[in-house]
Image (cartoon, rainbow, N blue to C red; front, top):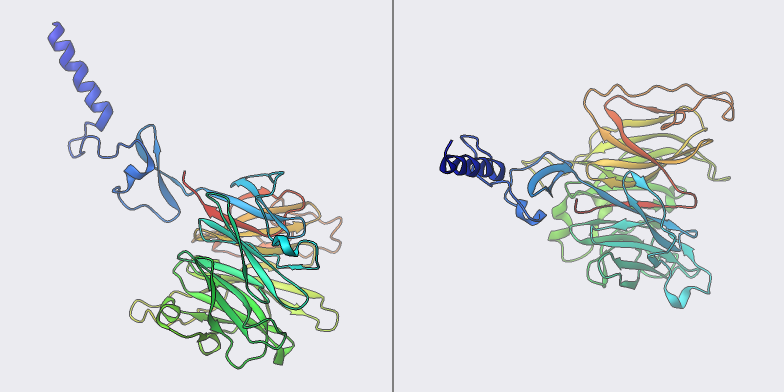
Length: 394
């Protein structure tokens, strides 16, 4: 073979390696030097993103960085990238503002993110309180007054914080919007009396706002609002006039795909002892024909408590999945629960004695209902409180 022929063959091989030699492929169409070069690639399945791997745009699972509260909710620490969870020894920021660190405060015990910032909060005995807003890039922390703050969630770069209309025990339960360092009331419980309650968002932007109803022994009431309800109103929306979620007694709410997950049970209003019954998912996707209307679907059981040996805390949405904390005699762990058509679930039998009964390594004595699966799990470091999952670049 002549040198010229060898050079032609070598050139053809290099072209094939660089851009592919398929008849219908555009040479180099999926080439990249950074993730931004993959912006024009075909749409991916839910839960996937493009990464630039070996100069080729490659579909990978969306990675998540975890952050958690420590020191009784007074500080926030990085916990690594799921599922490799471990608590950093140095705090990212203090939830409590400098001027309040020596006085009595009640930490909120919640942690939310908008993809670029973290938010936690606390209140004081006079119901005044602040939220800490921390930028993940740059590390700056702002402290913004939100009286009676209790819970928070984010949608489209704005945090929504459940609180009170003013620092008074008789003030109306209200929801504040916090975007650029200033908080303003965007929704309230109208004429209802009570305390601040849950805040959650579905992956489609449907909001769930709640309050603890003073007229019903402070049981939680939940209401669903279409995305347009908040955007269209120039004055605070009465969220109690929106679609009600009739779920009995509820204790926490977190986004779970196009719906929310809700922890249910019964609480003795004298002793405040709580017997949890289940975690349910409620679909809240507005119909395409009427995007301003939300009709809550029937509750679908995700987890069922067969005894009191294992407890659950709803932690954070993780894309379209749900992150929960499970605690029992074997310690604490985080489970990523996914909706999975055809998944068989896992049955459980009530234990006569929690100390000696066998416990599943992931679910303990919880029953996982069909249609849901444990996608992955990780041990939770000691002393970590509420956890939030932030999507990050691969």
